[in-house]
Length: 112
Figure 1 (cartoon, rainbow, N blue to C red):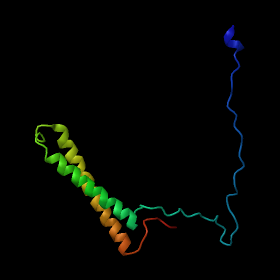
Figure 2: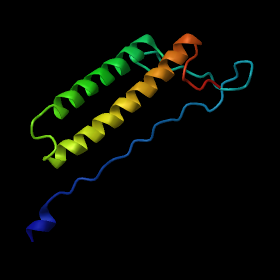
Figure 3: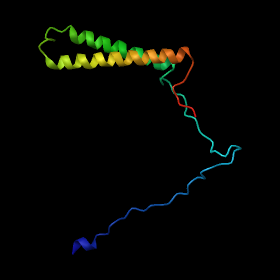
Figure 4: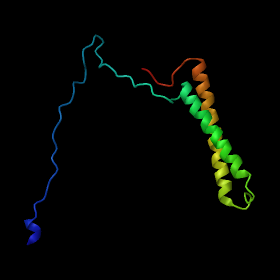
């Protein structure tokens, strides 16, 4: 009897008017908004610095882990060294791509 007395709330959907699909700006296509540049994005000096710092810290972590006395006996250290090695390879390869993009002054964005 008490369940039927409870008032249930229902979600309400308010329709929003959609913007026009095409705007006549001479070419017939809608104007496109370009994404803003932000610090550290790939292909910029900031991104290169972040990749290099990432690889330096991964190398430091790898050296610290491998210089411990019980390194060969702990299996988890082996997995961490493998992960750090992959991170170093990944970071340095992306740093090389960043260097190339900076040298040829190209962006990684796909402009249409």
